[in-house]
Length: 285
Length: 259
Image 1 (cartoon, one colour):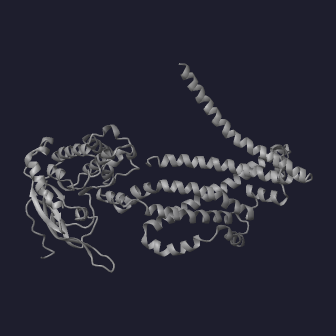
Image 2 (cartoon, each protein chain N blue to C red):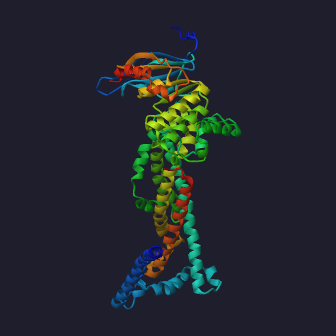
Image 3 (cartoon, chains in turn red, cyan):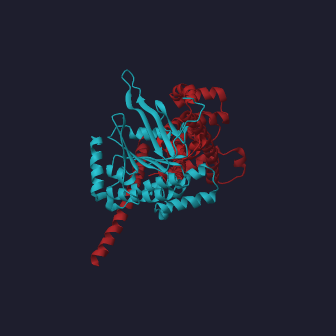
């Protein structure tokens, strides 16, 4: 009995220890941040908050500073600057997330469709395979100036940029997935009387779902980079825009807030996609 | 031979192989001949096993009958008509696991019926009957990943049988199973086969299995049909048969072909 209690104690303390260790890492990071901020302050007493603000500064001055991005209409409502800042963040989050999710949705969809075409049709593969292989090698960032010339800061340009980047990635992923479908499944389906169309719908499509879900996760990861790159250079609004203006006027604290938002959204989206994958590919061994 | 005149077939003949040859081209080298001029007839409702040393082309021959591999020359006739490609009248149980991992057991078993666009209630009715027949009623809503190797084989058999083909083609279906599971499944296969009575071509390298199951055993060796043996034992066959002297004698006489 006594040993049982001791065992429970050991379990509890083990769990406590684990939680402690986990939070210790975060605490250590925050501590190092504060030390860094202090050291910068010693070296540069005038502009230290612009370069390496303390945590307290980030959540007060930097946050309210974001209110300066408010539109004229918004300023007229005469809210406090914290409320203004939060509204600005919310508005721009909506803009960026719309671009990110909308662009990803179309880009991934287009990629999957072309990828399936390449995967199942020899003619398609011969016609477009070599071209796509060459185009795929272009670094995405190298295309930004070109998209700027073509579309200026127009919304359509940012969308096309995201769609292009993700479609290029996803089509390779999809074509591979289609060609990796084990021939035995297709043969079995045929001997059970499935037509070509039925083989496609009932064997190839379900068989590639897990790989497509994996590809989608990676895609949404790189979608952040692509969306930001687009906003960074071309957009008139969005979180990327706030980020670049904060850099121009040297407000590191505002940049940190935007980065924190990115992290939050990325984790959220990743969790949702993981759940979807578990749902759609639960049959995977 | 006049192609427009329907070929004369013997009564009760289900499958006929005429001068079937298979060779694989190899660049810069001589063709790899698997077998030459195979002529073979399988009667209606007959259970025929195909045995032979490994690499003799048993699986290739079965695949040709299934329509999944084209022969280099020769034809396969089903009811006197030459086949081209796979078809639902020839159900195949493969050596590897071929059941669809993304479908539950019940949805696997009704797959063929679904492709045939049979009405849904009927699909489930037939599928449930065959799931019961292979003893998996408790696992109807399981995914294949949750099943053992023997259970997956049962699902594959149920899938093929539920689709009601005219011919069963089986390629070492029990090859990967341990002895007791294998014996168990052989008995069940015979039980179902006795109910459904279909022409069966069964590839195996297991002599005991071939004798226990078959009406006739075809030995494929040296690129040709080396021997065709009648199995004299009456049905239904019981496990005790496996240890009888006559059974062992037959097994011994087949041994020499596998070397």
